Image 1: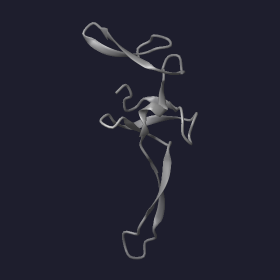
Image 2 (image 1 turned 120 degrees about the vertical axis):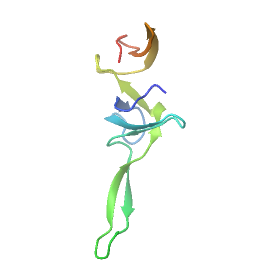
Image 3 (image 1 turned 90 degrees about the horizontal axis):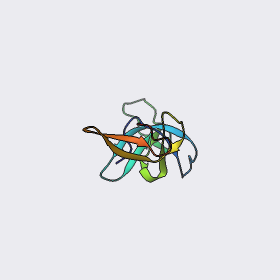
Image 4 (image 1 turned 180 degrees about the horizontal axis):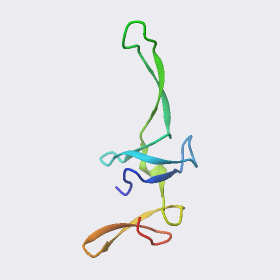
Length: 101
């Protein structure tokens, strides 16, 4: 999977189209990512103790990795990512400006 935890991304589709965020968690086996502050839904929680009130919590729901584009650190544009070998290490690079990400 080409997206990693901590990458800055831009949403390509869905209700949050055009917004940017940071990847919190990656699920490579299913091809989903969870983005901080995007694709939120409300979950109602029950009170845990006597006298405590229930509350509504906003949680980030995973979304398909195909709906996000990585924002390059050097050119600051949403881009695709490629891989190349530099010496013995495999490096991700921006397809637009060819710089390593």
